[in-house]
Length: 109
Length: 114
Figure 1 (tube, chains in turn orange, red):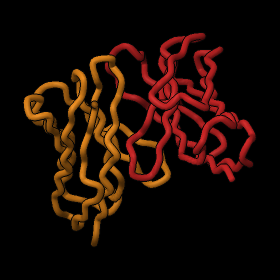
Figure 2 (cartoon, each protein chain N blue to C red):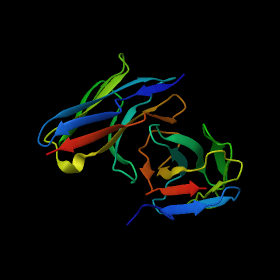
Figure 3 (spheres, rainbow over the protein chains, first blue to last red):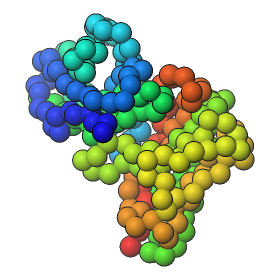
């Protein structure tokens, strides 16, 4: 079966760094997306990785290891507005997105 | 401003009634999607459409129906056959459905059936 695992909830302090992990087992792999979703709102695109390595985009970076079926999203200089759920999604061999349940990130002052 | 609109944001219905959720996009995207989001679960695909007048079932299509008569519109009907219709429904679109593009989401409709 297809499976994506993420921690359910994480807590971090304003100004700190947090790493949100995602492991996946899917039928085929055509890339991995990270989305941010504030409570009751639509998910918004953060990053896309298809090759191994780190992609940096401002305060956010995303890493992929295809051989390990593993990705992480790194958030630096955390701000209160970063409190949200972070969704990991993998594109399978049929170009369909398989979604993880999301990680709720709580930022404390 | 281009984007995806869904209305209404909150919808209440009695059990046994069909209800239609609207989704409109002005991004000129070919592909459109309907997802359902329940607490503690990932987004689950209900239906998707890669082109006008064509659509395919997703993982949980039972109890739902869609139409794609116009490129801009992809309404979802939740029928009385859907056993647990109360959920947050998200519509999305992407440039094309058979290649890898990010999906853009509408604000969602929270449906409550009692």
